[in-house]
Image 1 (cartoon, rainbow, N blue to C red):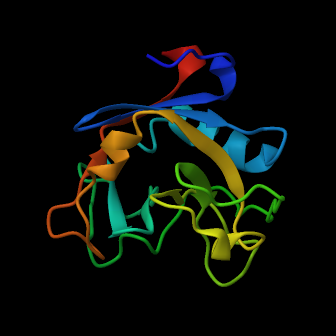
Image 2 (cartoon, rainbow, N blue to C red):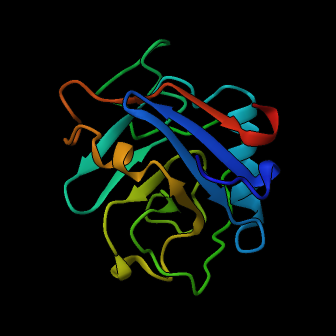
Length: 168
C-alpha cells in the first residue's frame, strides 16, 4: 500500500479491480483540489461512470449530473454535465501531462472545468498548458489501465467510491 504523506490531499478511489491512490497537488491547483475534495466528501463521485475511455490516451469521468450509474444515469448525456457549483478558472502550470497524472476536463472555454477529470494512460504532452494538472496516481494505475474502453463504453466501469484519505 502506498505511503500516504498528506491524507488531507490524497484521494482513495475504489474501482472494480481495486484501490487507486491519488496525490492531489494543492500547491499547483488549489481550486481544483478543493473542488475534488468537496465533491468526494459529498459522495458525489460515488458510482459515477468512466464515460470516455480512449486507448493510449486517457479515461474520463466525474460527470456528477448525468454519470451516476445508480441515480439517473443517461449514457447519451454523460460527459455533458458537472456539479451545481460554479465552474473553475484554469490553473495551468508547467507540470506535464505525464502518464498517471490527473487533469481537469473542460469545454473549449479554459475556465469551464467543474467536476469532470481524466487520468492519462500515457504521456500526453500535447495537452500541456491547456488543461489543469492537479493530481498524480501514486498506486493502483494497473486498475486504471483495466478500465473498459469506449466513447461511451457499452458497459462502462465506474468509480465505486471516492474518498479523501483523511476521512477514510
